[in-house]
Length: 58
Ligand SMILES: [Zn+2]
Image (tube, rainbow, N blue to C red; front, top):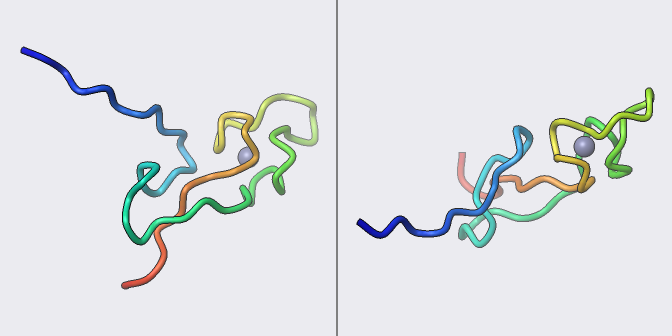
């Protein structure tokens, strides 16, 4: 059984990259810096500073 390669999602991601209606946005938790105030990598965006958000619809 071939398992398709799935993109790694961070806790803050609301949708997979490439999902129609989803867009990359600045992570609210770290304000896009990718780090928390204590210097640790932001767990919400995985240190990328950006998360995928579902836009449009509900
Ligand atoms: Zn973040």
